[in-house]
Length: 536
Image (cartoon, rainbow, N blue to C red; front, side, top):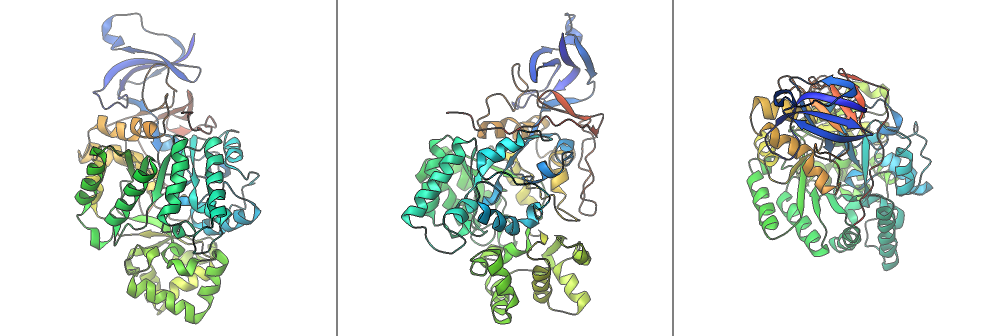
């Protein structure tokens, strides 16, 4: 007898088609049968060792978070409720060009310091891997949800070239090609870049094109955080479209927003650019989160020249009064490339987390608010915080536009990604609320998407981008990564005031046919594993 039958569910199967009522039978981690309209058809109803009454609940494929920063959190915190509580059953890691494989002893320490604001110091995780394959093997020991991995181009450049602002030599470029090929062979699904973060931002287009050729040869995709989301955003998007066309590589645009005052109301221009490329045969997808503020590290705002050489060099420059004044001028007057070419507006920069608890007074306040309270200039406060916290502070940037968010999420190649940073006392609520916010606020309350459309955006579309042949749909033979939610009550519990509050209306989540959320509570099941690139 099979393990589980989910009885009388309203199945929204991820295809975008209308829902239907069915009994769904799960066994051995897969969906083994679907009996439609079983209650009304008078047929023999399937039986199993366990029956779950799903009356009034929607059964959908598990949600796929196309942009996650859980690279260490999955190992540090086996509970990891932030994601399964949202119905997420698969996260894509290695984002924005910086993560923890491939590394050597030197670059591991450098990367740890560079992205401490994203993932913590990492001192509480035994990093016993160096290659992509070894990292995926570590995930295979059991995690809360499944995880796929993108090779981080910035980490690759740090390993082969260093943190200097210069072109790679031919030998260094060959080394980068080799590292990318090895990562793809070991199971990565593609490559990411952070082109406003060092050292990835120092790569010229010709270098990126060569690496994308390698990715494409293995059937992977390129996921850039491109060179600007502010001034020059449209040009930056067009650059990525042209680059990947030249390389013959599929393109997935990370957190595809149009932010800052210069881009208010300009989402249709971005979508027209993408539609033209799609109609010409380009393979493009994108992800967004359903919020207006962004989130990154405070150090990321600095001009690229100030970050050359890595974290220790940044701290040295900040400590020098003359150099610090040059940094301030680039930030506040000319518009730093780290701040997307837009002069920083300190009233929009809210400190969301610090590494040193003694600096907690800054958290939840904008840099301008802290400066006024201390009777100082904003740059003096930001500089002091970066030095005292050794580049660890994370920030919210209140620079988005609701009309842009809605326009982009309607697009035919849109998928969902939380970009969720789990560090800090007051992280962005998207880390805990992205997927239920889509379903509650944008589907039920605003009607921006239909329920069937939205589920397809969060399931089958990302599964197709990841080339996963047996995920993203409720189909016989597919993996039993499933979510059951109440469409009348599902909603994000997290807010900017209380960002770690878990969602409502998602009572059951299964990974590999096992309950990781049951009766609305996290179980102790660690059914997640590394999801490796499918062979061509």
